[in-house]
Image 1: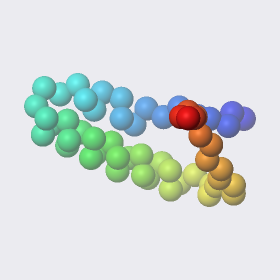
Image 2: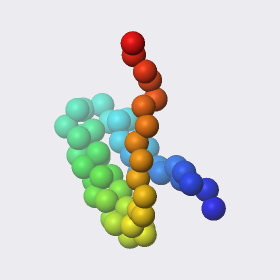
Image 3: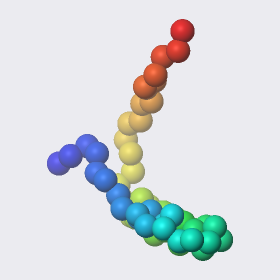
Length: 55
């Protein structure tokens, strides 16, 4: 089992010519993404790390 799984819910949402169409596509994709995330098991541990350190 992989710790990271790619998701493709938002693929193609920015392909529309009109900005309002892009927003509509993103809104619809986000609903599907939310349903998918809520259907999965809850996270038992979360830790954030810094990817870039700036002096």
